[in-house]
Image (cartoon, rainbow, N blue to C red; front, side, top):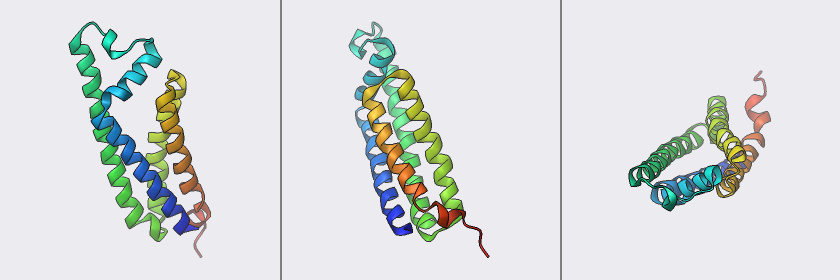
Length: 142
């Protein structure tokens, strides 16, 4: 079960990395989806080019942070989780819960369908990979 969960979380980390790269290299797509969900406008509707540029730069900045977290969690997966170390399970619960949970709640509130679909996929992969081996990590050791 631990091996299956590790494979699922590898897929989740690859998905997370791909989503992060999308945010880094195509921040306009992500920013425009959020802007349209919140205001009904697209980036081209923003009168001040400095404001539109700031939105795109901030979105890219968020993508860089997400990519760093994805890389770090991949190392946690390979060094601790696949060996059944409890700290790694808790690290995934905390980091993944905050990242995917917050993102999913915000996308639901904003009604941003593009990002909602991506966050839903990420959350399902994350939860499935984390909860499948929960007994192994949470069992009391004799």
